Length: 128
Image 1: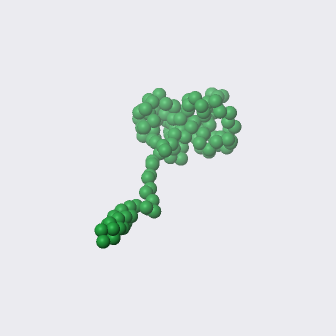
Image 2: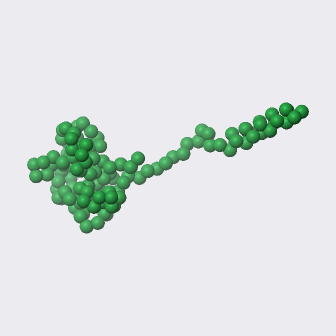
Image 3: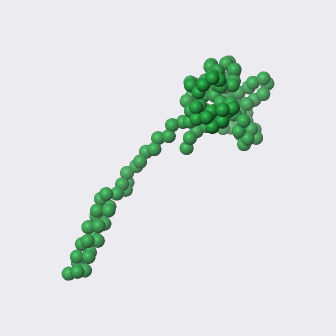
């Protein structure tokens, strides 16, 4: 009798634990892209621009060492904003208006610009 009661209590406990768990449910976590304010708060001297909702930054050591080939022009800097962090697409804090933005053949997370005969490499700064 005691053993049977023990089994019933164990079964009841397992049923309660299993019934209250989230097994099989999916929790979604949404992470927004980093914005100009976040980047410039961490490094006020960062050279950045925004393209297609993503902030791109240059002067990153490991990126500078990559050998990349300029592909097609995908945009150009339309606004220069070096006074605050209110950025829209094709806004830069250092590149002049009219600077052309190119894709890189080898990587989708790096964009290239040509400035004064020099190719600059900009890495997408994504949160994750």
